[in-house]
Amino acid sequence: MRLTDYTDYALRVLLYLSVRPAGLSTIQEISDAYGVSKNHLMKIVQQLGELGWVETVRGRNGGLRLAEHSRALTVGEIVRKTENDFAIVGCFGPTDEGHKGCVIQSHCRLQGVFAAARDAFLAELDKHTIGELAHPANDLARLLNIPVRTPIPAGEFIPIRHSSLNET
Amino acid sequence: MRLTDYTDYALRVLLYLSVRPAGLSTIQEISDAYGVSKNHLMKIVQQLGELGWVETVRGRNGGLRLAEHSRALTVGEIVRKTENDFAIVGCFGPTDEGHKGCVIQSHCRLQGVFAAARDAFLAELDKHTIGELAHPANDLARLLNIPVRTPIPAGEFIPIRHSSLNET
Image (cartoon, rainbow over all chains, first blue to last red; front, side, top):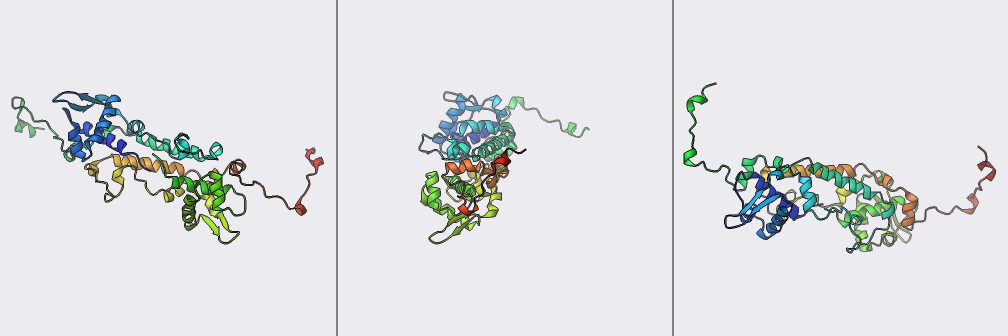
């Protein structure tokens, strides 16, 4: 029992973008970070854009960023959109795509049992948001080669008053 | 997200045998009843025999029957044995079979989320036994072309006293 690589990679893209503190990312960067084919990711990013979960900025300095509201997306919401087949057993799917209907389908209780199991699976995924999974952010960012802190411009540098550290 | 046909057919074999009131069944009968290839079923029946869930009687009048204790088997117990892959996402499986480890694996919370979802799925399946699913037995038997009642030998025929039906 597996989810598709498509779902796996969609979650990884969202996780990458949620760990990135600011600025835009490119598909190339995400592809390099995970070692996953850029072609695979392009189709996924397109869907994530269509769903409004990822914002894309076109042009030479363009790229992707997570839509702010996407931090609240649950893993269940994502998986329901990216996974194209939740037919746990053949009789859940359409009978016209090469699957002959099962002869006991009209009286088989297994269908209800598997539907309940699928719902329990998704209910568990609904307990967790992308924003929550993006922790520990610094550790994830390090593993993904994302610069954790943007350098502070020289003019805005405010030195810590060391004396104040000892005041309590 | 699907279970394998192997698991689907294993459940159907157990269901068939649990609906059969007495006597032995053949793989040919089960194959005919479901319209599923006999070759597929032979491998499955062999495993069910090795697990002690199905008893096989060899010889000309041989066949299969459900081991009595198998009525108490839960769907979860069966699926755990027949499904060879519960790696919901790539990083659950062994890295040596063509799957490159995911770079964030050491700090990724998704693994725990998916493991909990898989456990919730199986916990739901553990609530139901094969014996329970074998109802309504007569309806299922009819759909599977299983003779529901063995004919009563002539000498044991006890006529209903119609007069008693009116006594209350």
